[in-house]
Image (cartoon, rainbow, N blue to C red):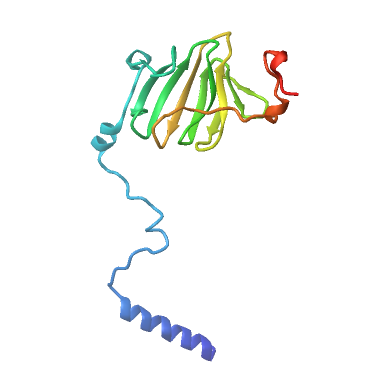
Length: 183
């Protein structure tokens, strides 16, 4: 055995004697592994099953024909998960929302057009992360059938109509009465 091997063996023996019988947390895995919830009753008490017949649809104020059904939370007060239903042919003017919304289309063809860009059409199973803040867009539902989609958000639902940006200076805009058009 070499001199270094003897020193290593001696250091290990000293370390074992100093810490023998003492308990230390497993610093590598302790923080990464959540404690198992051993109470089946606790897990069962969190279970929520909502069948189609249990979904309570209500009118969305300010949007004729649009229905909403909160699955958790309250769409009018804060964070929520809800189903929305747009009638076939529905169209909302240019608008924004305060909070991001995660959207999954369940039925129908949902149509959205970001301001100044082409529309995109989403069918069942499609996903959209719709930004909150200054993301200006129109929303509509194809006339062939109603649109049903799930929305989840960290804040309350709102719809803030905005005026479309003018594409041409006032002097270049077409008026309905050519006799009163600027020269």
